[in-house]
Amino acid sequence: MDKFEIKEKNSYLSEELVAQINPQNVDLISCFLEKWRVVRKGRKRRLKYSSRGNYKNELLHLFAFILQNYHNKFLLDFTDEETIEILEDFIAFCVYEFKNAPYRIRRRLNCISSFYQFLLKNKQVIENPTGIIGNITRKEGLYISNRVFLIREQIEKIRYYMEKDKANLNIKLFFELSIFSMARPNVLANIKMSQIDFDNGIIRNISNKDGYVLDIPYNKICEILILELINERKKKRISTEYLFFTKFGGSALYSMENNWTNYIGKIINSPNLVSDDLRHSACKLKREAGMDIETLSKLLYFRKTDDSENYEKYYKEAIKKKYQI
View (cartoon, helix red, strand yellow):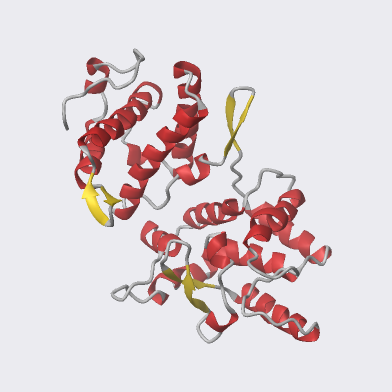
């Protein structure tokens, strides 16, 4: 890696401190700076020299923080939850120690996010934790994370209450499909009825906001709810091409991210629950149940391309009893 240069007006980093950073973490930075590509003018290009210096400086701050507060461990040896805690602590440290303003915090998070996207692409991690860290609010000068990880008992409580309360079928299906498929809300909102493959338990060729086409699995619980939803719409003479539908028409994404998620959060007294928490909770629970990282990664980030392997190969494990949530 290039010789270290101090980029910020603080006395935290020094050449002596950088020299003590875990060499494995330094290697991660070097590999990232060498191989990461950004799109400029429609083409993938290497980082500019000035950008390389900025990225390196940001990541050195993070790894120096890990050196002094987390035993200088190799980044990839931390669990997902530990990584989130580290990043939250690092943000708080930057606010207190460096008096970083919100725009500066966003810059740091953007850099770390790019770094994790690189690790994700190389299959060195299965999740970009900044997606959760980004869900923070500032209160009285403090950055407070609103993340929520559901436990199995809470999931059962949500199911019980929704059944007792005779909740809207849209909400029940949104909840079950979120925790089984681990698909993002913007993917679920784009599902069309014609894409549901009832024979194989897969919803095929869903358009994602990033331009990718996805397949996602569903289980027996979801299938029953889908059929109930179809029958309900027939009785009410509702005609729509989309699986999820609001009485106002159009995309159900807003309802998913607000009204429906708020309803679910109130059941378990979690007003900070956001739609992505369902996905992350499912990921955590399936990992704890023993699902291997490769399968979990494929389920979380499968993108359908002409040369992609058959998706069924990766969701087989997910439908085994011990991975059910």
